[in-house]
Image (tube, rainbow, N blue to C red; front, side, top):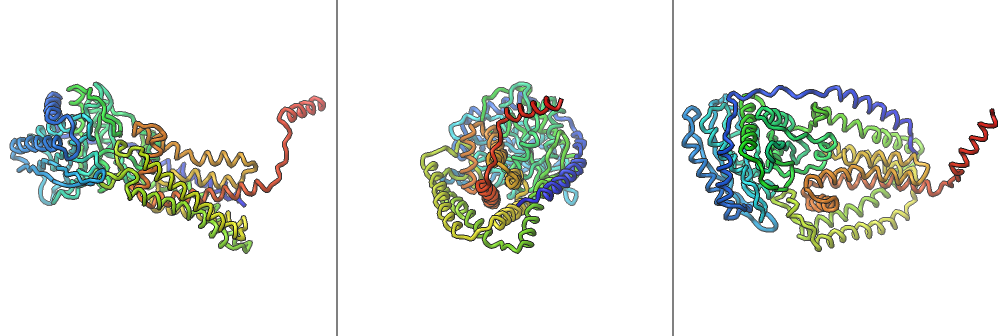
Amino acid sequence: MLNVRVYRIAWILAIVGILLVLLTLKSPGVVPSPAVPPAINGVAIVNATATVDALAPTRAPGSAGDQAVAAWVQQQFLASSGSQSSVTGAARVGEQDFAARWQGRLIHGTNVYLSLPGTLTGASQLPAIVIAAPRDAPPGVAADASATGMLVALAQLSANTTHQRSLIFVSADASTVGNAGMRWFLPKVHGVKVGAVINIDAPDESPPAGAVWVWPAGRDNRQALDLEQMARTAITRAGGTAAPQPGVVTQLLRLAVPQTFGDQAPAIAEGVPAVTVAGRPDTPVYGPSSAGASQLAVFGNTVLGLAGSLDGMTAIPGPSAAVFVVGRQLDAVAMMIILFLVIMPVLAVAIDTGLRLRRAHIGWRPGLTALGWRVLPWLVAAGTGMALARAGLMPGMSAGEVPQPGDAPVLVRSLVALATVVVVGLVMSIWSASHIARLTLIPASDVAASLGGLGVMLVAAFAFRPFMIVMVVVAAHAAVLALTASRRWQLGIATVIAVVPAVLLCWSVADQLHRGFAYTAWYLLVTTLQGGRGAIGPVVAIVLVICAGSVVTVADRRLRNVPQIPRPPVWDVVTTRARDVWADR
């Protein structure tokens, strides 16, 4: 049923193409030095942080403590705007009130911002640089306040300096509610085009002389790699140590199933390059405050240095689907070529099988009908899960985005809803199997239809969610290789290999969430059923997995009907061979 020659040739061509594409790897460009070396006083950050902690140790979104800190930040911004040099014109302090739905209720948040105009105006004006910091914290968490303290200190220092681009300092609210504050702020900056966003998150969570983390990830299969490299250079220039970059596999998994908690994500979704400079990895965990004045000064000088480098550039590279490979960048076009090349052997086999089916004058209809009956139950089950999630039986969304782990507990009603989804899928599968049994199904038609469906879904994934291929391509190739199996245990190995990407994804996200493997699998499942990870990706993945499983089922049916020739024990083979060799002597 499988033309191994076609599959092998396609793989040879794919490997040659991948090697040629890898020759396009490029080294990061030179980062311009800021016109004025940054020099912020870490003690000023410590004092501002202490004031915020004294005002409100806890700052749940929209709470009285959150609003008290917002009022204090506004006062500090007003004082900074009054001290601004007349060279750059008048500063402006403003606020934005908004509402976001969280845990079934509306919360009211307030963004506070300070705009410091640049020296370039009119036709020569360049897009502004936004420096932002989240102000809120999860309910009941005495979260680190150093991000707000640093934002205020940076604004006070920048108000007395000159810069080509406008600088906008934003104290963003409701960051723990789907980054609602930043999502509201960016489209509402009237008359100002944003060129880049630098977000500050919990610098005080880094231990003294500890690493500085840079978060470049978005939620739309893009990341701000060029800006990340600039941030790493700024860290080194400030005397700090940049945390290690994620490996290629981790980057690909996080592009396939995006998971980030930083305020850089909404900016990347708007096409604006953005990074978060933080004292911890990209996690929702709020650790103990341990950095001293010197480490906070490193953070502050990193942010100022990065802003200074951006200020000297006429064009800032935007977010893209590029990845870093051993310290060098593989651009988005090259990445797309590689993703297509790894699915090319499966497409070649699917096309070849379809052509051979046509030459044999065997119809497609029975195979396509059987495939449709196999896919239907699990699409219905997925739809049932989404309906139950919308009905409130599963953890809800945070302002339309994936919630924090603390907002997605494992509840009894959620487990019942999930069990209902499984039961619906199984009952529908039994019902569908009865319809398939009535078909006059030819194995060749079944295989061709399943491989054709596999190819169509891979093309759909490439067209709409290219990095989804990372999650499903192994299963696709395992299904193709299952057709060459001569023993049923080989099908078991192929099945195990097919689920490796899903296991790696769970481990990667578990590391981000600081949770166990089982909870992470639950979290990914319920947030998908909520609709927080889109609709196209999950539907394509379901259909593709069913197609792959259909191919394996046909291979298993074939092996069940083939009489197995017993093999002699290995020891008997060895001893017989040894006697033959001795006799030849």
